[in-house]
Image (cartoon, rainbow, N blue to C red; front, top):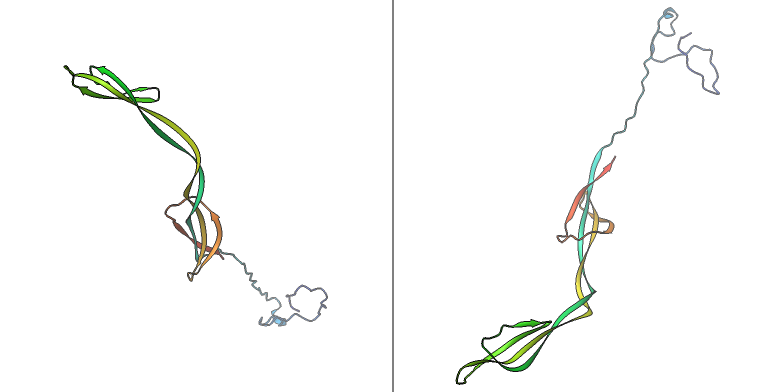
Length: 183
């Protein structure tokens, strides 16, 4: 009988016959009873490896849209009132313009022929500044920027990924990032 045996499986009958192993010469030969043979066992191990593979690109770009809107504003206007006042006053030298409160006074002079020449102020021009404010609405053109994300596959086909909003970018730049999948 052979020294090689195997475990019994549930429900399997036990055989009294010697175990026959194909391909092992002389195992059942009674003259080789002391011959000992070793069977090598092999075991496989599985390993997982991550491989990065470029399958296309993800393109992120900004688009600036213009739209018209009405914004509230306060318009400030300055109105100038000019009035003339007759003076008829004799002076030795031409007086300089002067300011009294919110009125600027500009003297107007002329020379008159008398036996002697004398200087007379004939009139004064009073300039008053009146400031007014009034609320109004002004039409303005505003810009808003949005982000467009697109996937570009290996064949160059472009498909949208998502919608979004971002900050103002006057150049409308776009940035392409490699799209990688993990295997």
